[in-house]
Image 1 (spheres, rainbow, N blue to C red):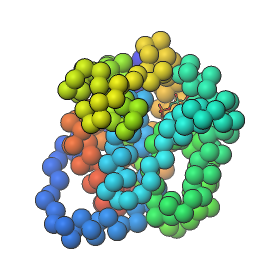
Image 2: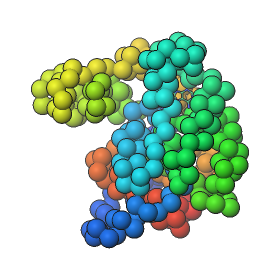
Image 3: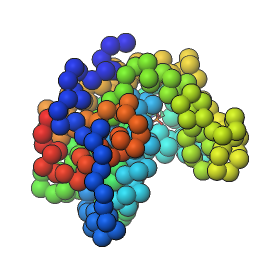
Image 4: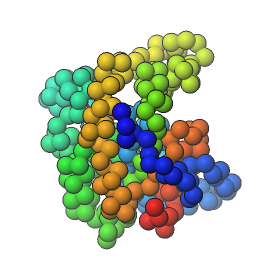
Length: 262
Ligand code: AMP
């Protein structure tokens, strides 16, 4: 599978992922937390670490993480109409229909906690979703005339993704994510924080993973070019240690001028 790797030189000069954050005072941190950051879109393959980065961003800036995967899994677990319609596609690694996901996102963006900004994690995933989102964000006053839209591509190679996905285990109680190869729990199979038995997501089984990566390459990878053409795309090297990826992501969010550079 070609095309999952960023083009040569994409992590070159100006790439923020590897540089250390400057030391900050408490006052600096409070000021930053008060920033109205606007919409942040995290792009990247399944397993690239979007969810991990989204949690860090949410905590630092006090804006909500909107993960369409999490919302869909919640709907499946509760047996809602949305959940019933999405379940089959999700379990086989296919994308759920644009209409269903778009209406879920529209509903979520209407909630008052999204006014200062929000993180979209796993949405958009098709060009049709991105076009819909452009209109939706403009209608909500984001983009050209309001707070800018920041798109961050978390780039990870294919082999690394495979290991991350097959090794991923999650605590069903507190959501903490482990990896049996890179970040194992202290006691095999149990959460370090609460001791609960770790679970593997149904769609992290090997037979489903290859379908998910195929649908990523076919449907979602074109979004890198889509946002690049809009001038809103930035990239971090998702293979760096997680704290360095986070530092790079924060820097992109806090440097509006840098957002325009490619
Ligand atoms: P994720 O947790 O982001 O990997 O999403 C899990 C599954 O939910 C995906 O494999 C899709 O079946 C479905 N899904 C999540 N987000 C979207 C989206 N934006 N468009 C279509 N399907 C989605």
